[in-house]
View (cartoon, rainbow, N blue to C red):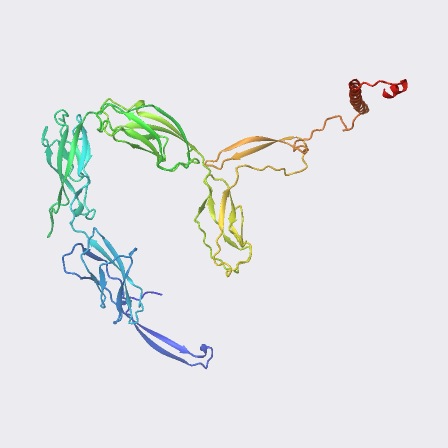
Length: 574
């Protein structure tokens, strides 16, 4: 359908016909009627964007816009769009007039957006609310501010005329990009005026200081005090509008004349060795203290040392903080270490000065040091993506229906296996390979409306099982080529030859060896020899026994002598 526009056509006549019997019979009756349609302008629309000048001195409230419903009798209500809600300085009356209730401050809030909607006498909405936008326009009501109470620059006594010395920084809270915040700089005082009153120059709009005289002499004057006037607009006339200088601020600058930078920083040692640490070492940990010295004047830009990594740290994993009093550097972890992407960091550290070196002097190997960092792998646990997983499922869902497939990864790129915990009703099962959870048994909402289980992701162990495809293998030693891949980026692979001895196993799981040429039965000679050896051992044992018995009897006769009465008794005794 096309939108109606009263500017194009403001009236339509519709010819409507009605026929009974659905017009399917020659006996049906038919009648026609004209309907006059007048297109009227829709009065309910958003007002044009409103612009209000800040800090208005007019009496408030002030009408800033109006909305109107198509019929009389409507009432209007303002709806906030700000999150979190704030107290907006706007109201609306029964005629749809929108008011600002107090002066606005652009520096406090530069833009407002809210909605206004119509309601009937029953407090029901008549239409969707329309959006009202209010932009607060800036006036020059803020003075320039010096970024520092005292700005300090350094300049070498042999500095060339026109050389950059530094930038005086100031700011203005008024709207950026307008005359109200356009700052201009002018030197109004220099002390001492040696060799002249215009030894230095400042660019009008940037605040850039430059040397304007080449006759600096540190022995005569080592410090200059300069006052700079900063203004936020000039008096300009456009037709009848006049922009005048509303605010001025004085900024204080000190310029120190320093010794020429003819000495380079020298490291206490050129090689700081190596350090091995785990990849889960916390960010911010101090790993190393480094020290370089500079023979130029202390506490000047010629002797101040800046440490930087010139090689080995493309991702800015490390940082160096310098103690300005001692020039000692502290190497810290700036970003989390990662063994998988950078297991080794071969770092080259340079020591330089903020002040440029004089002509003919250059940094050399004394201003560089080497340091090696070895990162150890830490077995990190698998990580779930978008956890926790909240799933709504009908209790009538059939067994086998899919519930959820979680997403997880292992930082070491190892394979992951999944398992369920706290599945006390055994309603679910999980595919250990991909983590997909299925319904394993009928579920009952009346027993448990919220069923909470844990999906546990674990790394697969870092070893492999080897099993024969064919059990009927010949008894011999097989050489099996194996490729081992680390799944890294890029992936690296190694190849090994695994020797497998296929044989019959004994009770002790060792290979049973059969002696060649033997049927496993003893020979006749072996049997005879074995029998003779057994009989010999038995004879020796019996001889020893009888010998001991005889010796025992002789000892008893000597201990108890007997006188025999006749030869027969003697025989009985013996």
